[in-house]
Length: 271
Image (cartoon, rainbow, N blue to C red; front, side, top):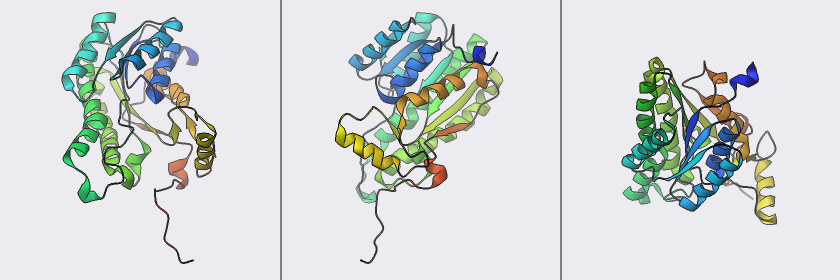
């Protein structure tokens, strides 16, 4: 019975940022669990590859190039899913900026463009997709699930790119509010909060050494792998989590709990 509730057969999912990293792995995991998937990202070649890999699993897939900063493109993404499959059951908003606009700048040097772009990609996109997806889900009559991706940086100081941390904190906040707004429509809204997870396996020996060294700061004694978010996404998308809504799930090897995460600076001490 429990394993049956984890199956996603007959369900349709949209995954943004599905071309690489965490989004790609979660899209593949949803497909392995039985869902058909609409893959969205700005880079067509990347989502074409994810689409092909999903089809190799025996599921249907669509690649829809989408810039999630544009609400009209988010609307078109949801419309594409419905036109292709006639329904929408899972909206997984994963797209985010990985290169941190304005990283390590002094506060007074952070410009408006970097600030707004960071918020648009990481926060506004989740709102745009949830707004369009929830309207479809409510009209279907059987509801659906919305899963947003935040970050552990939302829950601690992140001076390297405080705008990113602020945007991801906003994702956690709107997840809670959306869950209260949409519950009467049988729409559940939850949030995955990853931290210290490698977007891809180390590409060379130097990267492997860095990953091992960084992992020593964590209670788990290692960094996480992108595929490890897949099972959590399946749980939140499935009927196994039918009584779970408005929650944030931290997956970070115990980094936040242990309080051992590097802050990006070293203390000044007398030698």
